[in-house]
Image (cartoon, rainbow, N blue to C red):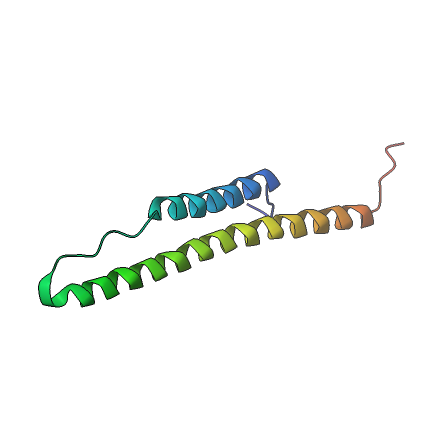
Length: 94
């Protein structure tokens, strides 16, 4: 392929998938599970579950931010293409 090209519809679809994925992850997380019954290591397991929940929150935030970044990039790309197109001299077909 020569040059470059981006289909704004594809970029919007990708942004939407990322945003929806983040929302699905967040919805799927739901409430934390009840505390484990693990005897002496119950505290350690609860700490691990808490750390996993914190990590999942970071993943959700990151995926949502990636979707926002793709959407913003699409807008920047479209504006740049529009501006560049306006600077190209028009050829008279006659």
